[in-house]
Image (tube, rainbow over all chains, first blue to last red; front, side):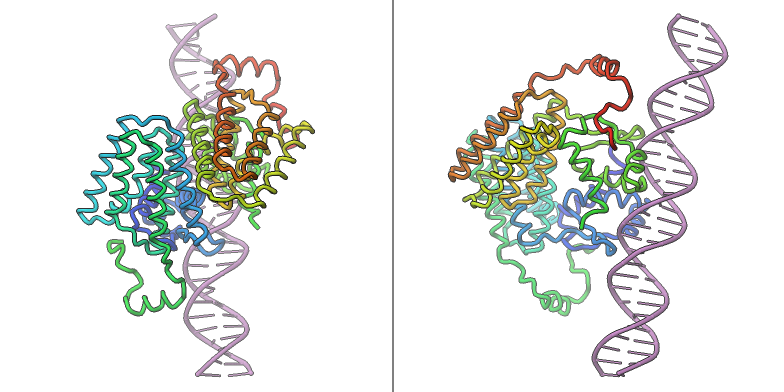
Length: 232
Length: 232
DNA sequence: CATACCGATCTTGTATGCAGGGCCGATGCC
DNA sequence: GGCATCGGCCCTGCATACAAGATCGGTATG
């Protein structure tokens, strides 16, 4: 149904969630237009949508770039996720068994992606757990909001070199699910609070944004494309 | 600084927040283009932005309309606001005196608008209290999200004929501010929870969506343009 | 009289063209 | 040799033009 317009948005957002698109990457209108086989107009519409969602930004006569959240913006993003996710847990009364089933299945996919070494799927699923949870609670509005915040979180984690282990995150997800299954929403909220805090704390060792960093890296690791997205 | 593009967005959002634009109202591209003295392209960009923010929607070859949230969407919106606002209160540790000062000044404006009978300013300020609070807490990201949710709340309140009194809302705002000033964040969260519940409960008497309603109203209030925006 | 058909008109969807402005390399000057 | 300047190239910003589709009116027919 929603093919023509949302497609190009989805592709970009999915790429961000899968860590295939990094913060600061340029998104030229003409380049995307030829890639998708459409006019610049359609690409521009998609980019404007993504800008409203806080995923890309335009510099007036320069071009479109994936957002590079500052330290402050990163903190705001984590605080927002913290507030929303603990807030929704404090709002709902009971948790249906179907919710647990969805989350259990999601956990299985997470483990599968981690085991198979698919870093894209791993990144996507680890972030999607939270979106999935809120959506399972029946609030699509909040899920959409959280998805965009998650995209920014992924960008932030790459920007500030998160050291948080995937297995650790997955374990924490499972513990949260266990508490939800037990009906202990307060404990689940506490675990969620700690979990988000862990992810945020894992990137406190910020990347020391001195200009020499880029130069040094460029001189040692030859080409302009680091081996994160070899295919494109 | 941000004049050219955001202006048209702001005008529409402000009109929604001020209850000057109702749910279901048509927003023709050409009409807005001539009104703002720009091309359809710019108008379209603004509408696409507003669509991403969940304020308007486009029906494929029909036109742009202000969203008419369904019962379920209305509940989702209130739950989202509930989760966010109680969540942020549970997230922050201390509340700076400057925050209290901002809220006190805001309360003064609310009372002023209520006393003067300026229904537009009243609607705007009553909703803006919540946005203002989150922004005063220092989280602009969450404040932007809440602003869009507030816009939908205003549309919902008009759609389902809210009976919640403005003075009552303002009083509740003041009690919340008092608890924040006292440093009792838990009590503030409880009051906020009750406050949002009150607003939501006040519109449970839904508007009986029979088609005769529109027809009857149209037959009584003559022309095609209702007298909501006489100047523009 | 009711209904089906059909064209006029208005709406959005999409492409294209041109203008404004920034970046970068070449060139001339100090 | 270093530096300022200038011109070409490329990118976005914006308007316009055309195409596709939907609504609504009139008209003809059963």
